[in-house]
Length: 192
Length: 192
DNA sequence: CCTACCGATCGGTAGG
DNA sequence: CCTACCGATCGGTAGG
Image (cartoon, rainbow over the protein chains, first blue to last red):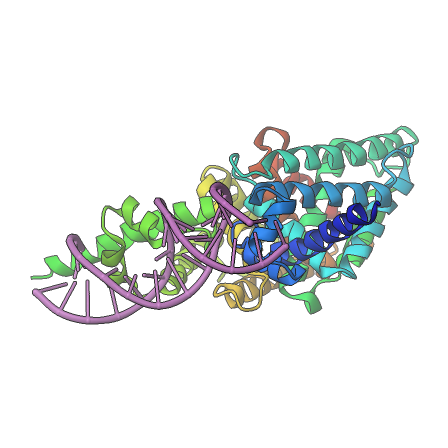
């Protein structure tokens, strides 16, 4: 009988979805296992049966997010303009799912502390994002499609930083910020 | 005898400085009055004699920051390129004082929640920053000193968002991010 | 998965 | 400004 396994997997997913929502609202340190558990329809002791510590729950949330993003970004694909367009498509998807942006912005700010359990995750995350953007900007430069004076490394760093900064401002005052439009304009301005 | 008043003012400043440090490390919700008080050399009940609630302390911290920033940015000055240079000078000052960047990044991310006590502060803060940048980019555009196709409103939004996004990435991986240099390059690229 | 519990910590108050 | 206290909440464990 694999019924027990299936039920367990579904329960796990329910808990992770609840955790994403709560982390987005309250951050990691500001959230409680009891609140996550309540939204998943169990007690906090029940949650700890599936994820043995608060940190293990966070790790599982980040791992699931990585898998989803990697699929969406097609990070295996060869570098080029379409990779940068995939970043913008990801931003477009995020705008339609504010909870994800909440989660990411809150955790990124918390995790600047070196002893935060998500610190290493974000160090890696930024490096991967920058490297992916860099390879694509580099390829565009080699093809002479980058505007004169635009250095690929700086363009990559700026592109990623811009995405993050726009997200926080968009969450704070959604009506004043055109997240996706701004990214498109930036990319257009950097191309020849 | 004004001695009592002076001592009180000094004590207040000590508490605010301690709060800036703790907020930077733990955010607002993640910090405790006991930790702030300990660093200021009093008990948490003593702190509440000066600031009656946790929220009142946060408000006082933000007010002091506003005053210091307004001085540094010379926000009363007429718009123009030198205002944008003042923003970069502020970033330069911040890089030399990481605690301030910590505080700001953590609070900004927390305060996207509409019921956060600093939410209105950040709504106002972003509006002021965007408006100041916009007036300056607009003036540059009127003088024909903006590169063709660069729209002042978008340039202002992007400029502020870039500052914020770079700060979080710089805090996470200081060696990989040239905060001030990136801002300079962005500004140069937008000018004719 | 739950009930019941633990030690620790929180913001705030009373009363000096 | 402090001591002493309050009710609430936290992550985690025992034992089933």
